Image 1 (cartoon, rainbow, N blue to C red):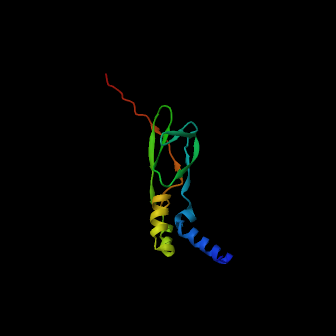
Image 2 (cartoon, rainbow, N blue to C red):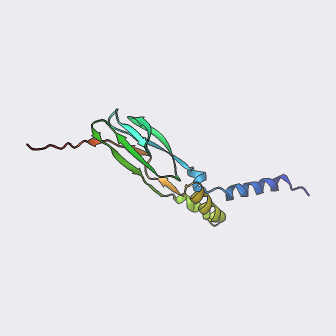
Image 3 (spheres, rainbow, N blue to C red):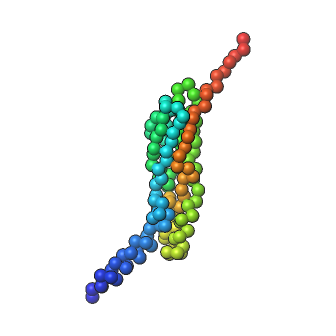
Length: 136
């Protein structure tokens, strides 16, 4: 017994939508983050990996945690944690499958798209190094 083509397409669409989380569909599982400084010789590191000097762009996976470090000779390094918050688009999964697969499995465990990074642009300037002056 052959199924009509319309039934096959309908079943395929239902399965596709059921196994894709709403936050993943609308916002993706990655986010592009831009880092810049007011100084050209500042080097940027993301999780201790060098990404650029003066300004840099990096793609962050929403499932992972990141820290951004700005380094400049003669200055103290500044490290900032890239913070995340809940992505409300995830709640649309309740309409698809009561959130069982789309929210818990896909957006939560699978892709991490249940969260989004709070900032997409960071301006980080290292602070002036403190020197110890000994009084003699």
